[in-house]
Length: 277
Image 1 (cartoon, rainbow, N blue to C red):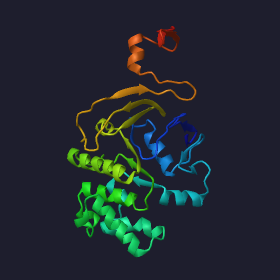
Image 2 (image 1 turned 90 degrees about the horizontal axis):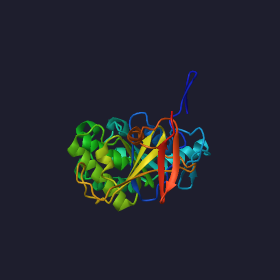
Image 3 (image 1 turned 90 degrees about the vertical axis):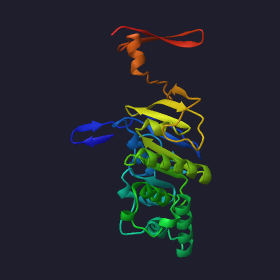
Image 4 (image 1 turned 60 degrees about the horizontal axis):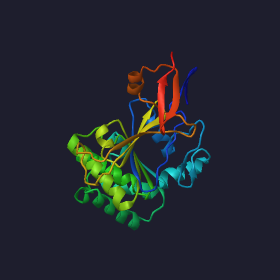
């Protein structure tokens, strides 16, 4: 709940989400749906007003200031949409990747070796000595991914990672995230409003009005590109612990359902009937 003067804005309202270790998922929603707030909470930047949030062994509602710092440094990597926010312009690509390890006390030789390995993983072995101004937008985002992985976090969060990139570069960055997920078994959560990204991961969860509303499951190969064919897609409405379901507006309009609805069970199926205004 954000408080602005005498107003309260509820960004998330009883949202429920479970992510398995090693999974890659997309959180999809329109502007103002709460998806960025969710990502900031998972990153340790915001503290929820209430509820329970756990990442691994960490209880994000009950951490000291020192624990929050340790969590951000070692447990979670973050990729901003604006590539300029991920890198220091006066450092080379290699130095940018080394910096998080400097903060955690990794010895110089070890951090140099890991930085070189990560830049090789993201396909920038020949660009290690280049600064931000010498790298394209796609290359900057690749370095950003390497920076986020520097301290081997089990969780990687990406906030609209392709928002400033063209379609071809976006596809390459998405493929790279899938490669990271496959080879390092890093859990990855991508927040986006782009349905093309949502169609390129195994599970996509839509947020509407601060709650999870639908979930799409699909079988996806790691080589799938943005805009590629999607097959074996199943979409489900989500039921929270209180039994609430967000029924799509198109369904309500089709049934001419207003504020009241009759719920019944017939032949093993739930039925909805208009109950008047």
